[in-house]
Length: 154
Image 1 (cartoon, rainbow, N blue to C red):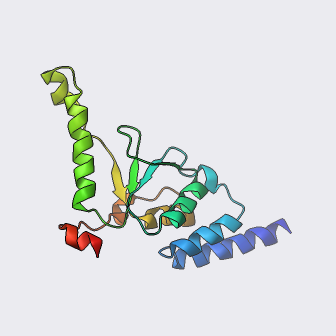
Image 2 (tube, rainbow, N blue to C red):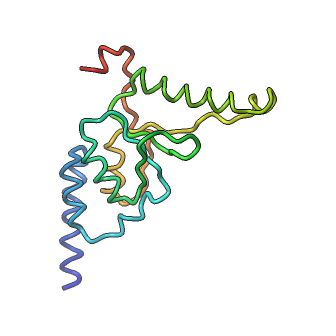
């Protein structure tokens, strides 16, 4: 009986690999599977930026054990999940870095202050991590850069 359950789970995961870009499907199927997904991204602190699919993304994040924050917290937030890199998002990140440098107590400290290191990935990265049961390379999941505000609203 236990082997039957594991076999069924393996079949479900293979189906998921084909639908990794369908976030809602992955979230629903993974929620039904009895796995150790809950600790997969336990060290990640995610900020969901301006996404129409925020509810599904939150569900995926919760299934992986990631923490979701309401704002980017310097030196704590590890990833920003978004579908597009807009000028507004880049402005927010630059502003955080500027404030970190301004907070340095001397010019020498300002020169050695680390940049705010936040990786920007698409929601599909979360989905891929769940489906493959590993932390996948986020390099494949970079959102496109939008150069104008007009394009970012389309």
